[in-house]
Length: 264
Ligand SMILES: Nc1ncnc2c1ncn2[C@@H]1O[C@H](COP(=O)(O)OP(=O)(O)O)[C@@H](O)[C@H]1O
Ligand SMILES: [Mg+2]
Image (cartoon, rainbow, N blue to C red; front, top):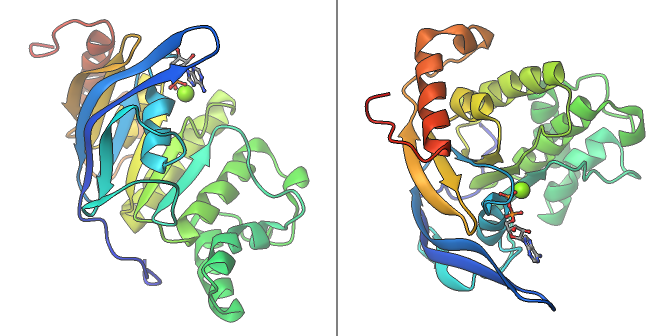
């Protein structure tokens, strides 16, 4: 957006990243050696059943979990911990309950020591973008689940990350709210073109939103298939009803079951 300040994403490379959790009982292999290149400005989904290591991979990219082997690098720099170049939104609502909507959204900007009027201006843009005008002074406890996730999205984007990491961001929402949030996220992405990596177990969500769907299976997780989604850039509720959408849906379903998708 016009207020962008961070350097743009040039490359995000996941190279030979694996993870085995060491627990007091026995080691838990969560992720097999994984390679993936994420392209600047693309929307990538990590799609797979529960327990296949999606969150583990996302948390390694976020720098919240340490890989057992391999490395993640962003613009050629190895990830060694969390940083402002990566914004996160989780399924669980993680707003600061003691801060208003506005001050939740300016949080990252305050961390970056942006001047108050400046931060306000940036926050205002995102408040409009996610449709929260009129709720600037509300507190999280007064908001619905969908609205809380709008704030979380605005907060993450306002800090102008190079890559936005989403872990089942709509997982706790009812079906209808979930669909409208998917449409909102797509619209926001079309405007900002921030690189997105989103974890989901919802096939429709992955197909609707992504440029590429990375299908993961197994325990420990492996990349089963990468499906490029060549639906029109502008996607709406109608897209869900198109033949093309159904075809991609079928491909992703086959991949999830470990079947060949070529002729699908
Ligand atoms: N902190 C942890 N300690 C031990 N095992 C873990 C930990 N986090 C995840 N796991 C295990 O790693 C595997 C992958 O988990 P996760 O990445 O959360 O899967 P997903 O997000 O695909 O549902 C699971 O078997 C899970 O139980
Ligand atoms: Mg998960």
